[in-house]
Image (cartoon, rainbow, N blue to C red; front, side, top):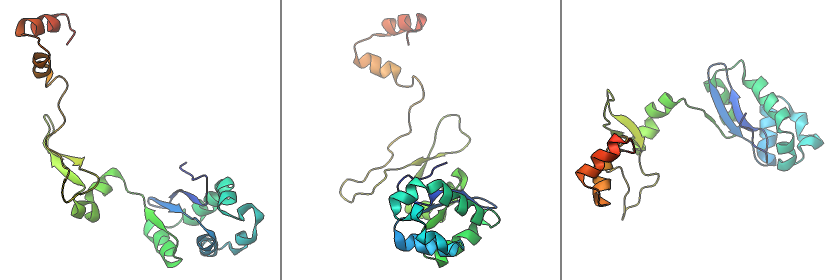
Length: 171
């Protein structure tokens, strides 16, 4: 369960073929959601009088949302939410997120070669793009121990000391 505590319904809801995420905050959204799920009487229910009360009783609302979505596809549910102007979104699997056209178009992921992988790995790039100081991936993450010799040499260890530390399994 990923239910929110300060509004409701606010959770990840299973559909017939996937999942959606919904977060209903504020009386106007709640009213539209109630009408969409066929439960307009909930608007006047004292358990759901405001966002905090809806959060306190969120399990009830999320149960209603799950019941409403269980026999519908993700696309069907999202169309109903969109028609009611209630914010929702499909919850993507990792592969769906990688393949998503928006994610690809925005360049959120950068392919990085990594030892022993059959193909480059998608790695999240800088979370924001700044015009003067753009971030990015300069190189891949090191493998275990890849830079040990360089670092130890900078600390003053010579080749014989490194060999001794390796023999003792310190490094």
